[in-house]
Picture 1 (cartoon, one colour):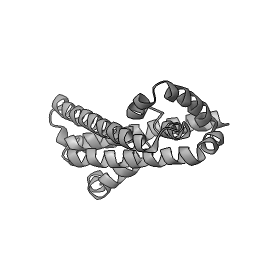
Picture 2 (cartoon, helix red, strand yellow):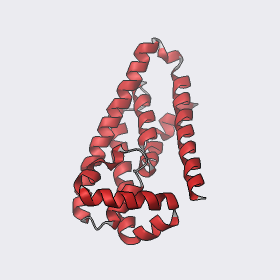
Picture 3 (tube, rainbow, N blue to C red):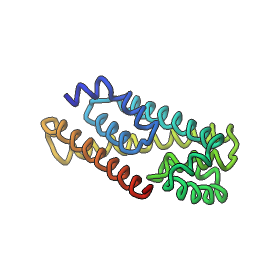
Picture 4 (spheres, rainbow, N blue to C red):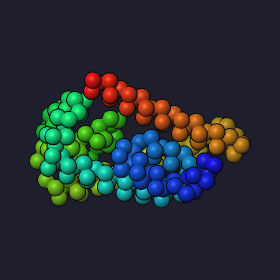
Length: 186
């Protein structure tokens, strides 16, 4: 069942997941690639496209409606103000690296757009950052899956259980962050 789901929707789920957040779904896809369920090069390309497109959208929303977005969500407001201070000191460095900092993936492009950062410069540096992120995390997850296979020996018997456990862990982490975000909004 999980294998069929990965074949039918794996890349689409990866694109959608990386469009909105990214880390967990890319790790799951990289591990799935190490098990032979997905192709690693397609995983990295799909993750790049989803991440790049999502961050471009959030950047342009930040340029045009940034204050409104930050004001609607108290958690985003606090993070956005902090992000704006960080961006003023090292703007190019943050554009290249924000996706490597857990929890900043959505608010940082909004703050970058709000800061007045030049659109063409963002387009280029965001692309470079997305490539580095997709390749680095994709390979790391792929080799993590390969290491699991080596450590556990005949993993083929357990791969669906392992993938299911990773999906449950990822869903649990997402749910925890979502619940934490809703508590701070109250």
